[in-house]
Length: 455
Image 1: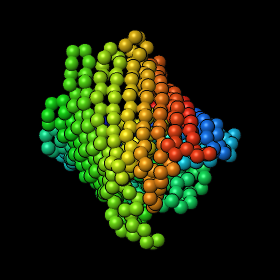
Image 2: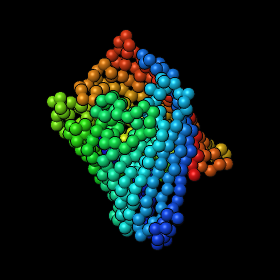
Image 3: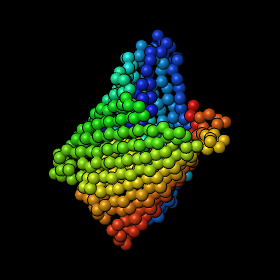
Image 4: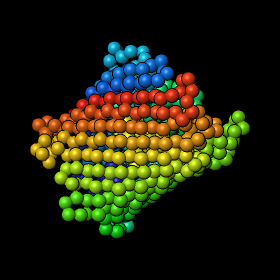
C-alpha cells in the first residue's frame, strides 16, 4: 500500500518543482543560485488514557530542525536534499518513551530527501529519496519526523486540464526507528531517528494499521479538471510481495464539485476506495485472504465555505461488511471522516459506519490576521466484523463504538513571517460492544502544542 494521498497542490509542487529551464548554464551557477529552506520546531505532546493500560498520563517534548536545499535548474536538471534532525529532553520518563515510541520519541538525524529531477517539456522525473503526497502513497507530517519514500515519481501535464502521475517505491522512512515488521518485534533501537527500510506503515488495515515488509510498489493516477468547477481524481497502486506473502492492490477514486453561490461556496465530494489481496500462503500455511482486507470504503461529503469566514462540512462513510480496507502506504492517507489527531484507522474497519461534522472560522474577518479555528465532532459504529487482527480472523471482542470531539487553533504570527503556533485537543471515547471486566469504556484524550519557524 505504498502510494498514498493525493493532495493536488502538494503533488503538483512536488512533481513539477523544476517546471522550466532556469538561467544557470554551469554546474557552479546551479549550486550558487540554489535555494535553502528549513524549519525549527518545538512540539509538546500529552496523552491522557483512562483504561486498563499501565501507562496513563504521559507527555514528551520534541525539538527539531529541518534543512533543505534545491539547486537552480541546469539544462532541466535539479538536485534536492532535505535533512531532518530531532532530540527529546533527557527528562522524558521511561513510560513517556514507551507511550510515544512509535510516533514522537526519536533522536538523531536522517537524510529524508536526496533526489535528482529532470524536466523536459511538461514532464518531470524525480528519482531518489523524496516526500510523496498522493492519495495512495503519502508520508505523514503530523509527527516530528515527516515520512519519506525512496523511488521514482513522474508527472506530466501535456493533456489539457490533466495531470498524469506514475510512481515506483522500494523503501520507506517512518516516524521513528521503533517499527515492527510483519507483527514481529521492533527492528530498530528505541529512541533513534527513523531509517529507510523495505518495510512500511500501511494505513487502515488491521486494528490500527500495520507495518509490513514489501518488495516494491508501483502506482499510476490522474487529476482532471476539464469540466468547470469539477475535479476528478483516480489512482491505482500494487504493492509486491507484502510480508513475503502476496501482492496487495489498492485503488482510489474521487470527485469534487464546487458550486459558487452569492457570498459563499457549496462543495459536493464523493470518494470510493478499496483494497484487494492475493491468496498466497505464508510460511505457516495461512492464506493472505485470512487478513480480510478486500474491502471498500464509500464516502460522501457536503460543505459550505467562505461564508463571512465560516466553513461547515458533514461527511458520512461506510465500509463493506466482511472486509477491512487498506487506505494506502505511509501514515499520510486520510479520509472524509478522519479526525485531526486520532486519524483514520478505525474508520477503515470492516462493517463500520463513520460520520464527521466540522466547523471552521477565519478570525481575519474580524481583524485578527493569521488566526484560524477548527472544531470536529465524529462518531463511528463498528459491527461484529469490525476488528481484523493481522494474519487472523475477525475478533468480535474488540468491536466498539467511538465518539470523538476535537478542537484546534492555528496562529500564523503576522509580525514574524514564518512563525506558526498551533494547539490541538481531541477527546475519544471507546465503548466496547462486548463488555467484560476489563473491556467497558476507554477514554483517550490527547493534547498537541506545536511551534515552528519556517525560513
